[in-house]
Image 1: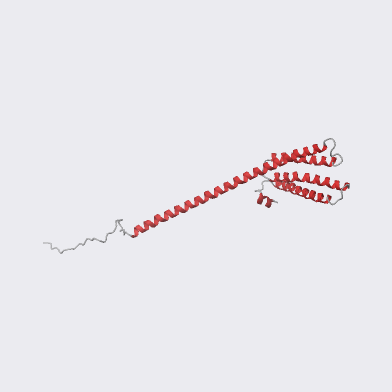
Image 2: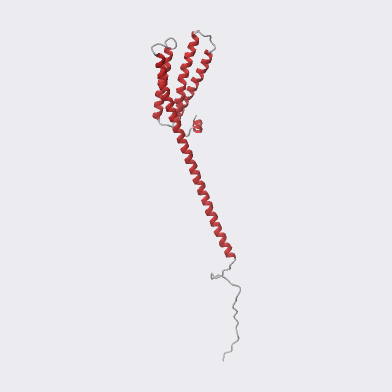
Length: 212
């Protein structure tokens, strides 16, 4: 789980966040798959049988519980403020209350005493909270990840510029050294530091002198 988290989200700051987040996420996925399977099963039963409505009731309950649980897991996994997680948990709690209430009134009391309006309204409120917090977490994570990538690209660009500048300095020094050596090859310098000129010379002759 830690390897998957680092690969798709980022560095692990708290192992509890990883385990809780993935636990909620996969629980939500399991509930949704169970809901779909039970609903498909209910379609094979003849209308009018009570077992058909029991299956439909359980399918709605698992599906209505799985979707907000999955979104809560996503919110927990993303590196956002814990306050966002608490708000999302409150939305999930409202959804679960609405789902439990649904099992109490469906299907015989569904249209009595505004039960349907209460269940739908309560679930809608919880769903809005869960979706809003999940969207906030996703957008915040996207902005943070984009900023981190841009900063990394800027650092790489600066490093490349520094390397090119250093290469240019090395080339300039090599060119200066080569020019000096070329100039030195065209002129011979004696030990006194004076340029030697072979075009003219001084010849001294010694004449024999007699002393009285």
